[in-house]
Image 1 (cartoon, rainbow, N blue to C red):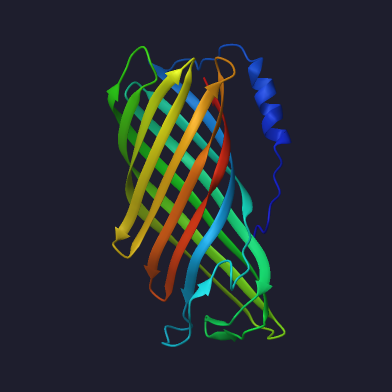
Image 2: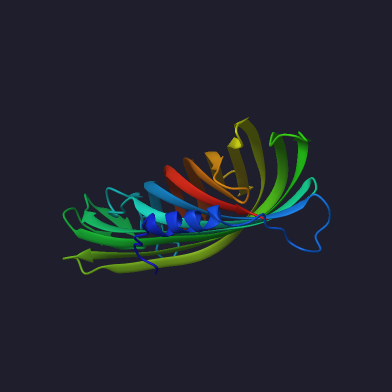
Length: 264
């Protein structure tokens, strides 16, 4: 388990300062109208929702365990990564979301994986939702002299659920881990606001069926600090709603973000 991370702004600011002095960068031997970008996001995410994990597929071996109230999960800092290759109107991108939350608190009582955590039990828990995303999209609308564009595409979301729950004085210790791949669609609307600044509105839906789906929404305001570097602020909202065999989850992670994007 990765546990709680504490990621300060110092590293992001240092990278931005270094990027301001970068010359115009280009990648050799790429087709005309091609470019490459790398982005990191610092996201302060607040967890919400619940999880149910049955023990051995036996009914009555789980109840709703609220992420904050029962499992004690706290708001946590996340460092996310994305790389994209633009080939004219086509774009291929990959994103890594090493989501990790932890915390502790006193529960009002729940059952997890067949173990009863009674009211008053001191519960500490860890939840990792490591996620990889591979996307392709196409610019359906694009302005040659501005950043204005509307892109639509397909993707695949691989995610790994890994959770551990401990109780005291009950002495319970339970864990569950599994992985899934969801195919999906995504869209991006970019609007130029003047002086090189842009507003990106992004949305994605990935699912196996109605009971197994995830959503990803974000809005990011970007400002260029050099020809190669852009800083951004925004908000992101990630939702998992799944029913996977003996596991049921309804997760909601949302919060403000800061971003650093380098374009070649």
